[in-house]
Length: 529
Image (cartoon, rainbow, N blue to C red):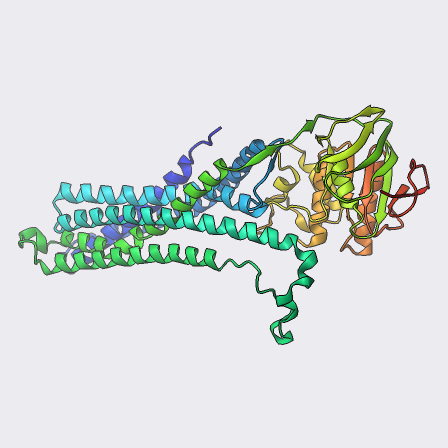
């Protein structure tokens, strides 16, 4: 579904631009005529008109920014919802498409009206009408104004073609950098084996690895894009100043009576100011080129379908037998979990706690048997079970869009109350912008925000990975209170190295060496392969 055009944003931008160029025209004429005006000339009317136009320009400028900002937020939400629908029941296979990359592309799509459509429409409209009016009134220098318009059109086309090529290279280099970074960070566990790092002098920093990926090529292309736009602006500025000199010198025009009238100053002043009101087009063209690349990137997004298990309600018990994440050397788990309450999953780092939670939720493929109330479930993502990541994803957007990313219409009071219960009053109001270009969140804030998002989705089973890591004791207690209340009617599996005393744990599952059996109240059960 395509979004509606932002006509109000475009109209206000046009009004702002037209008011500015009209002030320039009337002010130029007023200054010229004031030098030769006869006695009795009414200076009040032009002054009042200029002041009224100035107020109109200021008002339309602020209104354009306000309306444009609100429209941008609404469009970002709409574009991301469409991307979410595109990714529904699918998994991104390209490592280069991180959350940050998707956020960047969706912002480019959402900002097209205020980034390049409105500015380019504004400049084209003003330039065209100036040429028409100049021809209509036969103003001195009209031919030079039309010539500069033609130069501007050619420059915009040439700049656009070059910008498209550079934007293509920027996207390619950015994708390669993200791919290399993902591979590099996935190898963090064996960085200490890197000979280049170990042989590096201490004063250079042993933590720096020579083979680390760099965004230098991306920055070079982005700088080249800006430089190209700036050069086009300089060439246009030179052409504008040249036409001013030619008009004022009268080299290419024959003198006439009208050439010495006050209106003769209008075209030279328009030409002189052209770099200010028309030069911005070259930077807008760069945004247009990036927009085209973002559209192409999202259309070519590679995904693989995910097997989905709809609305699995847990009423009696969840049973695992020889269960583990697929293609991973992890212990096989056999256990039975109750339908309500909190089960703590403990074990040393690397023993498979996170993988167990993800495979139970269906985020990772699994082997073995998983039964709900005696019925075996196939391998797949369970839609009403929620896994809360150890490193949660925070969207670049408002707090409310992070709590309700699917646009399900969660009541504002529910969001506000839950944030307060989790000690996240600092994230209020819900319209606060977080993530990239917004308020930066600490690790603990991200964890609690993700937990709130999962609870607000009314998950039947909640699987929480390291919820207490990085939290102080009072905040841990607040999180425990929220989990305890939710566990009264739901099953919560908590994988954590830290278990606060206020967390009402009904059972504990220990992953390590020992024997295999069923989990019962108050029993510690060790699992082996």
